[in-house]
Image (tube, rainbow, N blue to C red; front, side):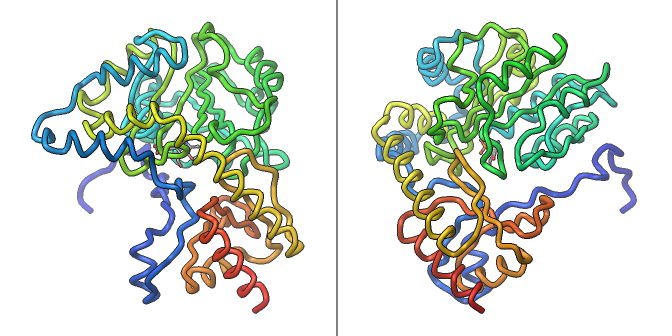
Length: 363
Ligand SMILES: Cc1ncc(COP(=O)(O)O)c(C=O)c1O
């Protein structure tokens, strides 16, 4: 190519999404593939969402509201924060990018666990920052390691709780002890994409406490427990001064109308949320017990997915499961060569996954 590309992006590896259902069905000539690879919600979304979206379909010739007034008001009420503390995004991915662009100068550092959700690294590099990666200890965030990695150039540190891909969590005490050691001028970005699935009450939840620490930025999404991944909507809750920067640089119409109305309807339907969370827990319990019966080790998880150690090359098992129409995720590219990550599906999908895995492992 004749065009010179931005130097900071030369080392970016493209985001590897879970294999799409349609692609697998086409490649392997199967009709009902099961996808348990992208931590999506197998229970769909609230029927209220369908009604709200249908009611707004015919006004899609108009631009969306640049600030989704009633949705932001609802979120502010839910969490007891001010309207001005909330920034909506085209998925929480969008907020991650805005934070990187808003707060990193070229060469500034962003500290994060290794491996991490890939968008942290991609967004930091795109903003010409430098990701500083700290390997996990025992499949969980190495908080001391993150602190040791902070230098005068550090502008932000990423915490994912529950952690993707291992499902591990941090307790309130662990987080508070960590935050005490983070300098005042460093943002602590707490990504809580899976927080609705947490069962353990000792797990840190940044929105349980009043918003008093200007360093803390909470990221939440409607993609997981609410089942709105395809609509693309997430949000950040943060100090007003930080929110003001993100609002200054975001695209004016970053959240489309259908996503706005879908999210509002989803928030109102607490019954669906309960069904979705309960079904996830049942799925996790089923998968865990079946995998353990096969003699496999499952990492403790508080999320909607689990990591299982096959003690054999997980790429090979992943490929063979694909041929049987079950899409899971090999963790080899994350450095866990023998692990698969499997998210919970419907009871039928979970069963199909176990049947396929058993068949592959038995050769
Ligand atoms: C840890 C983590 N953060 C953020 C996201 C992105 O969510 P969204 O769909 O809101 O962009 C994901 C999606 O898988 C995730 O795993």
